[in-house]
Length: 155
Image (cartoon, rainbow, N blue to C red; front, side, top):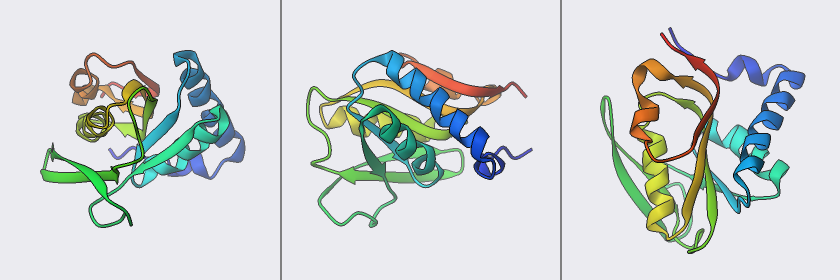
């Protein structure tokens, strides 16, 4: 069974409430400077949350999509390898970052995004998701990070 946020995006009131719930959690972490999200669905709510909490937004993209010098991380997916990149000058030491994506499955993309943040010298304040598929063990892959999801599917 496929889980997706597309139906949520069609409902203005539900979409607004989702942004508010994610922003409330981000504010509880205190002092978020940036929200970083992996393409593509993570951009939708990640940018909205960043705007709502007064933080900047950093897109983590597939190779070759960013116009400047990039930092990159290669990570393993259940079906192969992938790479994420961000502008190498996007983060500096001392910055606190919220990692956001629409869905937490195995945790590979989120963990790679955390690595990009930490390799830049910044710190991961937490990870937020709309949906968690807890039966896939993504939370365990993110052990040591504050992980927050609005909806949890256990099977």
